[in-house]
Image (tube, rainbow, N blue to C red; front, side, top):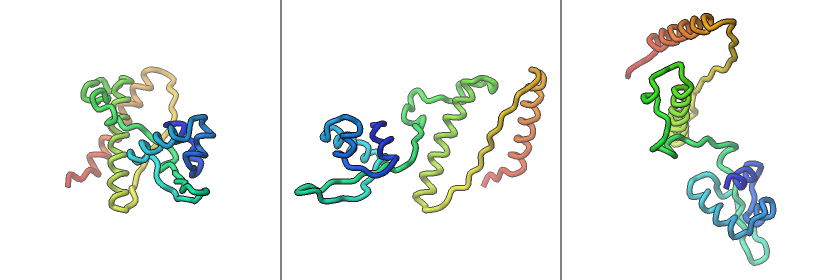
Length: 155
């Protein structure tokens, strides 16, 4: 199914067209396309007549996909289980929560037919020493905490 999604991300195609590209029988491709369609990962792009048959052209609903931690709810990372903010496990748990929260926001904005305002910051820092790293973490934590306290509106 991931191969079919990858093919459909490049443009609409029918089950017959995809079968030739991925080396599977058309019936099997059709079966997988219907499953992907049920989950909202592909959608009908159009139909065309080919002899006695109407071919359905499908397209991917997105250029890329991220698997939500909710898909594996029983084993999803939980920041509450990893209290050490300096651990890699805690970072992954927070990242998983971010994926879930942003996915919820995107879904809500799409349903409301509104744009979603977001902001992200990316950077790379190399530290000369462990003491510099610790000082950076402390200063960053205080700075971000102060901004959150200043602009957070409970209502």
